Image 1 (tube, rainbow, N blue to C red):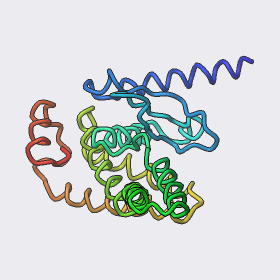
Image 2: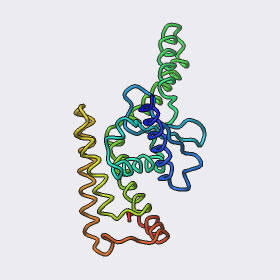
Image 3: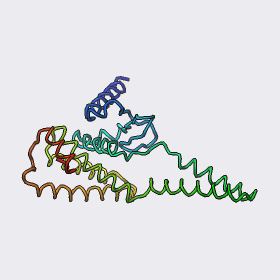
Image 4: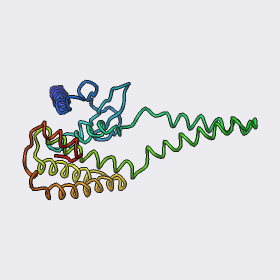
Amino acid sequence: MTSYATTARADLSELRRLKTLLPPELKSWVTIEAATAVNPPLVTSEEIGKDQVEVQVDLAKWDQFALDQRNLLFWHEVARIQNDTIPKDGWEMAALAIGLGGAVGELWVQDGLLLILALSLCGVSGWRLYQRNNGMKTLQEAIEADEKAIALATRFGYTLPNAYKSLGSALKLLIEQTPKKRNRRRFESRLDALKKSAAKAKARPSLEGRRIPTRIKGLLTCACGLPL
């Protein structure tokens, strides 16, 4: 019982700590909770209402990462929220089912106009599902979130080398822990992109290793889109 209570307190403490890592502009509408699903992702987000997003963390797996690794993985998820690339409440599957059911029904009664409408609904919902699950698109979104996570890390006091090192080591650990080949390749692609980004950052000697005042950093980030 004591061990369980200690673990529960530690989990609650970690969720509170992560809350402090949210940028001020997100704190009022982003909540952080422990994941309760069976075999959930390490960290994921979903809309739970209008202008409300919940970040869910699998705390059992989370403990296997070092503190700096956790921070960068968390900021990756925050970046996905900022980039508006988290899953929305999906209507596509329901619309596809309705469209298919309608198409079959209209074939039976032979109503051409309603058949066209049902097929159109199938086409629109099917295209939206394809866009949502397009592998290249989701990979690019993840790479962009990694870049923004580096920028968020520097906003919270990390130097560029430490930010890149922390995220890179976290991705390496994810690669080692991921049994599915397809998912593992996704992490490998993100790591390759991160290495290229780090090499480009290293080629900017005037910025390398320096802490830039938050106000100036924000202006530069907005102006040129570079993680500083």
